[in-house]
Length: 78
Image 1 (cartoon, rainbow, N blue to C red):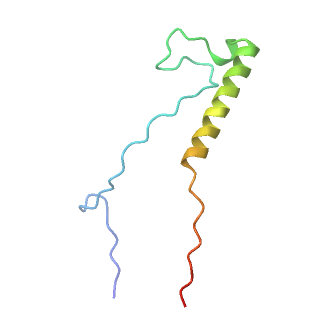
Image 2 (cartoon, rainbow, N blue to C red):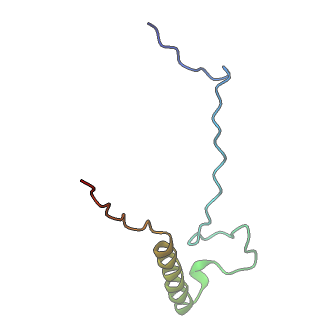
Image 3 (tube, one colour):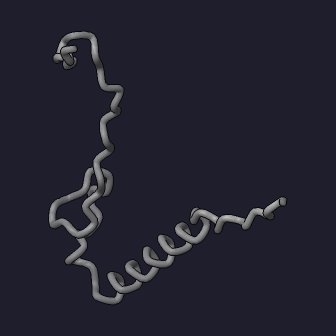
């Protein structure tokens, strides 16, 4: 028995959608959506610390809400 591999153009298509671009929070260039906003290194240290604290709390709150609940123990019927 021989195996045949799908070749490009043979009708086999991937149904992948393009990945969205991830924002670079710490890059030195201008971001696409924040024209005129200061770059991360230009922010005062207090502002950077406050933003990092807020983002950390946001991520932790989101993780706590979306975490998989622990599995419930199933009674064993004999």
